[in-house]
Figure 1 (tube, rainbow, N blue to C red):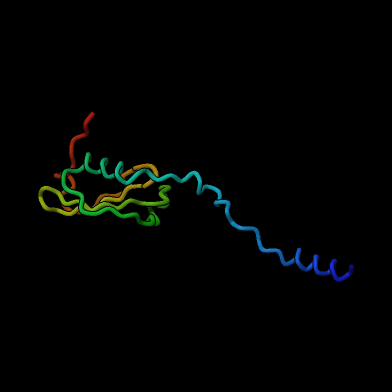
Figure 2: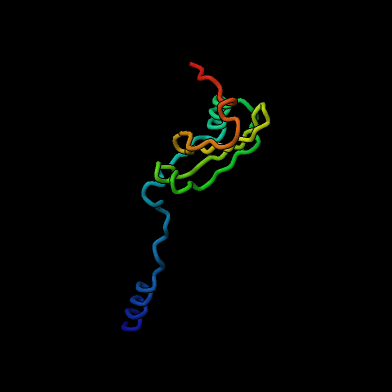
Length: 111
């Protein structure tokens, strides 16, 4: 009987750690916008052709603005300038636009 008790005690103390099926707090609330929706917003704001789209980690200054994930787009304008556009994947907010010809490529807001 002692042997069974000792064996049971050993088995209980050696139980595997609880699985981490529960997501850390805040992860479940993070829902990035669909890439095609954000790409459409870029095309509405800037004339040109989208060359590439990628997901990136936010830069420190973007993280300070609350960005957790960034969509980065490369767009060639009708004047053949290359724009690098970074957008908050969760909110769709334009974080930065760099490159020559930004003003020439900017389209008027359509209401």
